[in-house]
Amino acid sequence: MGQRAESAGVRLFVRVLPVLLIVAGVCFDLVTPANYTASPLFSAAPLIAAPFFSTAATVRIGIISVAVVVGLRIYNRETLTVVSLSELFTVVTVVVLAVFINVVIRRSGEQLASARVIAETAQRAVLPQPADRIGGLHIAARYEAAQAGAFIGGDLFAVQETPYGVRLVVGDVRGKGLDAVEAVAVVIGAFREAAEQESTLEGVALRLERALAREGRRRDGLDAFEGFTTAVLGEIPRGLGVVRLVNRGHPEPLMLHADGALDALAPTSPALPLGMAELGSWPDRADTWPLPAGSTLLFYTDGLSEARDKAGVFYDPVGRLRGRIFPGPDALLDALTDDVRLHTGGGSTDDMALLAVGRPGDGQPERRLTVDIVRHSP
Image 1 (tube, rainbow, N blue to C red):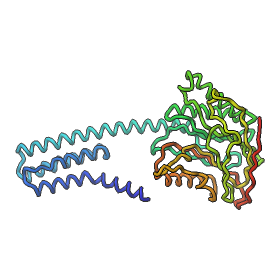
Image 2: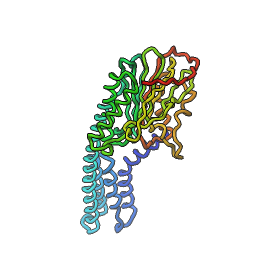
Image 3: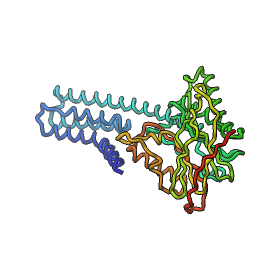
Image 4: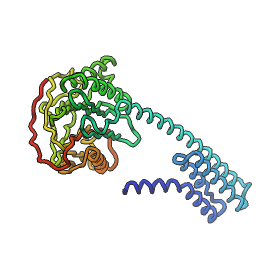
């Protein structure tokens, strides 16, 4: 609330500043001798309006400045003196310059807005919002850009119902911009196909690895393409009450239990990110975890865990969420994004993708289940 009030106060001050300058110029001219001029104040008014006001408003401020100068010269009976004509010429010149600056800024802003719309459309095309219910599970997803108005990034998520249950992927492609969006498209496209066809989660991971390698070769090497992607793949089979995970160098998912308990689902065997097979290749092994009724899985990218406050302290999702109970995935992500903004003071240096998957329960806190890791091999 304090930041919003401060921002609103700044905007109000900027809007009234040109008028205040003109009023100050009139007062200065009336109380000072004739050889003193207030032309800097009358010239400053349209210049300040140029970057913040519309073209029409800038023109109006300019006309008011010129009219006031002419009116004061008539009032002082100095219409044809060298000083008065020089002052009028200066103000008129600055007004023309201010209008020109305004037009240039407006055109640049329109081009930037157009580029952002194109970027947002491209990203939404490859990263559609998942449905609220998939395979009997409650789903919520958020994509938080690091900067307001920025939509391009390399974070990704996808959820899909398959013959093997609900499968999902959350990942982070190296890099930014349109190249990152292209890489996201490759990963999401490969996942959509593999999730339907591969009988194991390890097989899906292998297909994603091959897709990135194939795209890298097509672009004459991985350096010409976004070369690696951290990702976690998940599978929730129907009716078994478990979740299987393959983690390829990605932040650990969190399991929030109905009673407020929390578990970090660390992989048994750490693995390299996707797209780095040339550095070493080991068979993927999926870890299997119990998924009790009423629990919620939280998947996120490092934009969450690496968000810093003014002192440089990283955001700790485990510490912030442990002991808290949320009515559903949407409420969890709403609270989490608000808490991150509070922690960072409203600013962040990296995009953040969040995916929450809730298994419906009876609405009552249940006893916490002991988590035993079960190795699932292909």
